[in-house]
Amino acid sequence: MNGMLIFTRSAVKMQNINYITGLSWRYSPKTQIVAIDPDKKDSTVQILSEDFFSARNPQISYDGNFMLFTAQRKPNDPWQIWEMNLRNFTSRQVISSNENCIDPAYLPGDKLVFSKLDLNDTCKGGYSLYTCQLDGSSIHRITFNPHSYFASSLLKDGRILTISRQVYPDNGVQKLMVLRPDGTKCDIFYELTEGSTLLSQATETANGKLIFIEKTQSLATGGSLVSIRYNRPLHSRDNLSSGIVGEFLSVSKQISGKLIVSYRKSDADRYALYEFDPEKKILGNVIYENSGYDILESVVVEKQEIPKKLPSEVDTAVKTGQLLCQDINVIKDQSQSRSIASQLSRIEVLGIDSILGVVKAEQDGSFYLKIIADKPFRIKTIDSNGKLIQGLSDWIWLRPNERRGCIGCHNDHELAPQNLVPIAVKKLPVSLPIHVMKIVEKKISSE
Image (cartoon, rainbow, N blue to C red; front, side, top):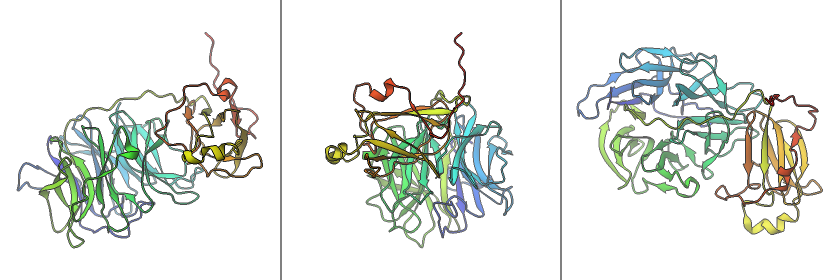
């Protein structure tokens, strides 16, 4: 199968798309995973998912011999994760759950990450990220906030890149987030403007760019082809398709460095596969089109460089994580820093349904917390009278034994910390929630 092009095609047109629940966007009825030889003009289509009612999200293993995908065996079955051997086309079920499990991606070390719907979740999330071994064992949840996560992929540096959206207490704007495969160090990678939506998994190119599809309200079901730079993702957005009439639905890369895009010129057309030159920003030759199908996503079968396998600091015997803030007076709008700094004196830490505690900042504005692990919380800065000075932070969680640091509250994500030792770190951290009198930690032998 080396060099073959695998893609998902759907006879049913996309409609009533819901980017929060995934309906019609991630769940498509009667979709097929098929393969063609892109070097042969009249290549016969080979249906790979004949044994399934609906299947999509094909992902190729690093050695090019296997394919993860999401599928329904029967119409009313939950969506589950499967793996196909591309040498003999046999499939085996990796994840068996009563809830929908979608969007798998390979991880180094014979593991994978996927999204799972968590009903009645104490974190009030929608779709959480989980990892497991390729045989389906050792399933571990790695996200613990009231967000939904879709369309994950892996960066060459070993971090997971995923589409995230807050779903509680209200629906937020989509963002591209990065985190380690153990759930630590989750941070923003790219933020959309109000009214925009991410449609596809991000593709990392050999020249250090991430390319994906971003939809505005003016477009029907598709969007624009957008790239950002790996080394400055928040401030390097480039619309590669600004001069092209029509809509894009997905993007993947070829061995040659060119892209394969799902594109249609108008609402009357079906999405078809085209080549795209990202340097010249021009649409190339059509690779596959069929008036009876929309092409949802594609991937080329090839060997790939294995991303870095990152070490993990998570220790489940430790029940807490630690968070250090260098200075709460450092805020995003630096023009307001001086006027606000004189008012800031403490922070309030809020959980899902309770206040975890109020902590006074040190003279230099620093604070140091020890917080129960795997529980979502937000932070707001207040004055001595308890009046809110800055808005709430995003939802945060700390994995067991994780240590995280931030420069300030609502700070510019490109700021580097000053070279100094905060006063707060010279003392023991403040334990939260304050109503928990004793936290039993792992005992470390002195031997």
